[in-house]
Length: 221
Image (cartoon, rainbow, N blue to C red; front, side, top):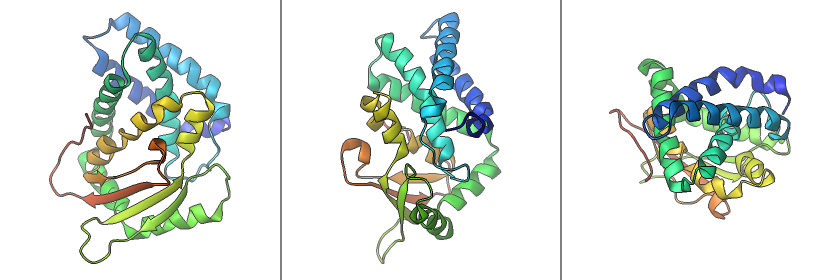
C-alpha cells in the first residue's frame, strides 16, 4: 500500500489509540501505555508498504488498515506476557467504545441499515469479481432463502487481513482478530453470526447479518 493511500485513516487510528489507552488504564502505567502505542505506531508506519493493495474505493479497506495498526499493539502486549484471549477481549471492548463514541447514533443506525442492504452486498460482490487487485477480498453475496432469518450474508473466500498477518509472521493473531468483527457490527446495530472463518482454516468466512432495532453489545469471550 502506498503511504498516501493510508493517510486518510490516520485520524481513525488516533481515535483507536485513545480508546485502547482508555481500556488499558488502570492495568498498565500511563507512561508505559504511551510508549507502547508509540512503538506500535512506528511499526505500523514501517509496515504500510507491506499492507496488501485492495483499492482506495474498497469499503472494507479501513478494517485492513486497522488490523495492521492493531497488530503492533498486540505485539507490545504479548511482550508484556498478555495471553491472546486477554488481548482480544481488551481490543474488542476498546473498539466497541471507539465505534460508539466516534459516530453519532443516527449515523451508526444508517450505516447498519446500509450494511444489511442486499444492494450493497451485490455491489461489493460485483466489485470483487472484477479482480482489479489480486490481493483483494474475494466475496460472494448471500441472500436469505425462505425460513432463514438473516438480512444479508457474505461468503468470503480470500481475505487480505489473513494474508497480511501471515506474511508478517503474525498468523497466530488471525483468528483472534476475527472476533473484533462482532462488537464493530453491534455498534452499528447489526448482529453478526458466523460459523467458520478462513483464519480458522475453513474454506470461507460465512458472515450472516441481521439488523436489530434495539441497541446491544456483542463481545466474544
